Structure formats: C-alpha cells, structure tokens
Length: 125
Image 1: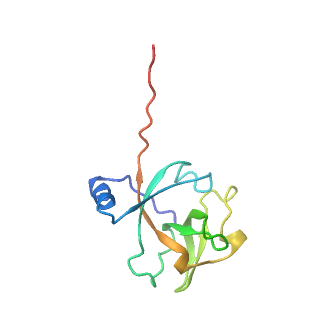
Image 2 (image 1 turned 90 degrees about the vertical axis):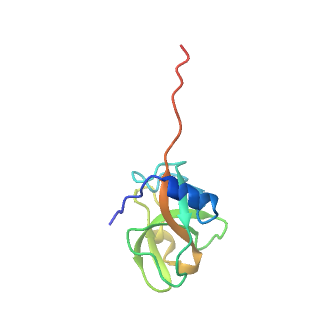
C-alpha cells in the first residue's frame, strides 16, 4: 500500500517553475521512513476535485480542525467526500485515528516527487 515517491526530475522541476506544482516541506517524523523531516515535496492539485486520490497516495492537506495547519499523510481509505489518512510511522503520527476523516475539500494536492537533499559535508582540513 505504500507507493514509493520518485525523486524530482527535470520535468517535475519545469512543472514547478511553470506554476503547475507547489513546494511543501515535511515536518516531524510521522512519515518516516518514506519521507524525512525537512524533505521538500512537489505537489500537484487534484486533477478532479471531486475524485479522491487512491489508497497509498501521499497527500498534503489542511488539518480538519485547524485550517492553518498543513499535514502530509498517506491515504488509507477514501470515499467521494472524505479521506482516512495515516502516517507511515504510526507510533509518531497524529492522523485519522485521532482526528477522524478529512473532507476531500481540505486536500491541497498529491505528492508527485521529492526533491533530493543537497546537503553536503564540507571537509575543512
């Protein structure tokens, strides 16, 4: 059920610069090991706002009780009007098991790619 998310390629970056993808960042440990804290994600809007993403898809959405809080979770179950979301690291995740189903209109988009980390160790010898 855990679909892997590919690294961003040239096409993904071009779509970002053309405004067809949005950039978000993972906060916290709830999506480990698939997504690391501070990892950046490219997200596309739902193709059809009335068609829910399939189980296994990672989405970015507004928290159901705090619109200002943006969360990244995996779709566990979906209907035409709501999603049940779970974090991959269930011991560290606050998700639908705690706050219930998330209305489909809270979904910002589907994660299409991760941007590989550019951090490098510098040898100062």
